[in-house]
Amino acid sequence: MSSSLYLLVSEGPTDILVIDKIAKKIATDQQQKIEIRELSPQKDATTNRYPSHGWEEVRRWCRLYGNTTTMQPNSIEALAAKRKSWKQQIAIANADGLIIQIDTDIVEYIEDLTPSYSGSTKKSRKNFAQRALLHWLGEVQTPEKIYFLLSTSSTETWILATYDRMEEIFQDLPNNFDFEDIQDVLERLIKLGYASYIDPKTQNKKFKKDLSIYKPYAIKIADNLAKVRLECEEVDKLCSILAR
Image (cartoon, rainbow, N blue to C red):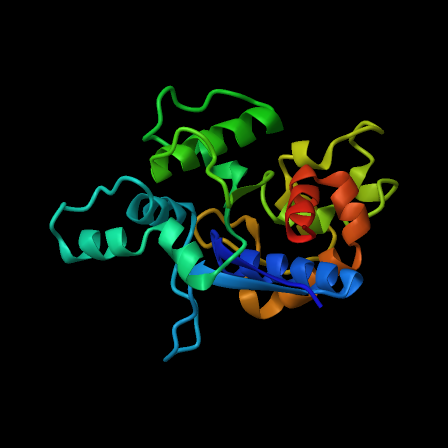
């Protein structure tokens, strides 16, 4: 049985869960072993919980372990990072590659890349997110063994893509709509009955993204992987990487 190992830097634990379930589905279908090993965030050994994370932590990781670092040159953290660059981490783990995941719904918040984001399409979001990741890593082009997973607009789009296009929730969209172009994914999931909470500041319903309730969502994506691959380019790209 062939086996492969991919290291993962992602926005958060729910993304890790989804990617791991997809990997297990592909491994089962192809009768091979695929391991996803998290680099950031990592579960705390004492509390068994993940620390707060997000796209800014992905940026921090890329800056720290890329070709450039914003840390003081002789600081302990900077010296440690030089000894453990992303290339070295792949080599030490004997991994097949490093996957870096980021949601493209945050591109408007990236302020350290000029010119700032001004597009409106899924392609422009992906292109800007990729430029940002390369910038943070200190790379001109995507290096060998690094794979960018640019969830459009977030991994929750993949949950929505498990539903049939004829569902009532999509009746306001054109027949040939693109799931990755849908901007109100979370609102549609709430209407479909997914867990939500009331934001105390705005009094609006918000999608609940707790890891404790997310496993069924990840399983739903894996169980409907063929359809989700067809509807979402980034899922198809991920599957193609893992199935090599």
